[in-house]
Image 1 (cartoon, rainbow, N blue to C red):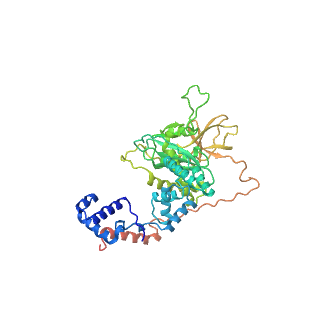
Image 2: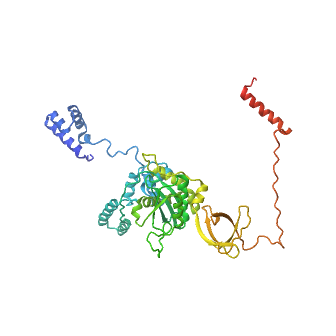
Image 3: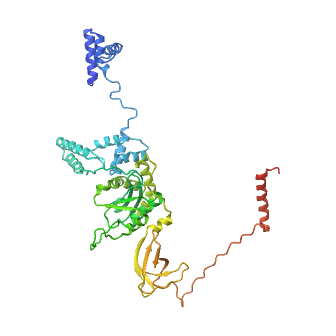
Length: 466
C-alpha cells in the first residue's frame, strides 16, 4: 500500500473526521472546526469510510495540467536561449520565442526555467543578483565534484553589482526636452559603431536614431533631421559636454564668452536651447534607453542578417516605430510644444556646416583639399580679388555654396586635369532629344476620339435617351 502524503490543511481535516468516526462525536462541533456545513461533514465521513486517508488528498495531485509545456518544448526553449540568445533579456526572449516557434510563454516561466540552469537575465536587478549569488555560495559548499564547483564559481563571477540612478519627474509636454547621447557598442557583433539616439523626456519615445562609425556631428545632424521632419522644432536639447555641442576657449577673458559650434549655431538658428551636463545620471532617460537598445537591438540586427552600417540605418526606421509602439508612454494631454514641422528643403538649409575661406591668386578657394570656382546661377565664372572673405556653406545633402558679401553663389570644382584635350581628343557629339509632337485637338487624327469622349460626357450629363 502506497504512502499517502497530505498537506497541513488536509491533515487537519483527516484528524477531525477520524476522531469523529471513532468516538461517534458531535457533527455540529466538527463542522465548526472545519468551517463547513454538517452536510459536508457527512460527505467527508462517507469518503473516509470508503477510501481512508486517501480521501482527503486533492485529486489533481501529481496530475500534469493540460496547458503545461512538454519536456521537449522546455528543452528546446532553454537550448535556443543558450545557443543563440544568451545576451537577450527574458521579456524580449519571450517575444522571439513567439515569433520563431509560435509558442506564447510568460517571462516568469522563462525566468524559472533558466534560474534552474543557473542563468540570470542580463537586466537582473541588484537584489536578484545578490540573492542568486548567496544561493550559489550555499550550493558550492554542498557540491563535491571539482567540475561542478568550477561551473558555480564561474556563475558567481559573472554576477556583477548594478549601479543606481536617481529619479526626477518627467517633463509635462512632449517636445519640452529632448535628451541626446551616443552609445558605442558592437552592434553587429564584431565592429564598434556609435548609435546616436534622441528620446523625448515626457513620453519616453525615441524621436531619432542614427548609426555612424564615430560620435560625429554628422550623426547628430542625422538624428535632428528626423526630429524636425517627423515631429517639429523642440524647445530644448539636453546633452553631455562634448565639443560637438559646446566649446570653451582657453584664453577667453570671460567665462560666458564661448565659441559657437556648428551644432550650436544650427540650434540657435532654429530657436532650440541647448543644455549640457557632465553627470550621466542627469539625463537618465537616454542612458536607460541605451542600455535597453544594447540588450535588444543587436539581437534584432542579427535576426535580420544586417552586417553593414547602411543596412542598419535603414532598418532603424521600422525598428524604432515598433520599439515606440511597445514602450513609449501615452500622455493624457494631447498638447505638445513642438513647433511646425519643416520640409526636407528647409531642414537641408538649417543643418549646415559653415567654414571661412579666402580667395587666392587664381580667383578660387580651397576646401577639403579641392579647389572651387565661384559661378553664377547660369554657370558663368565670377572673379573676386585675392583675399576676399568667403563663407563656405555645406548643406545636409552634401551640396556646397559660397556666401560673399551676403550674396549666395554656386561653385564649380576645378579638376586637376582637363577631361578632353583640345588638340588631340575628339569630343563625342551629344544627341539632341527630339521634341515629341502632340497634335492639337482639332487634328483629323484626334477628331474621332474627341467625338467619342464628347458623346460619353453628354450621355452622363443629360441621360442616355437624349
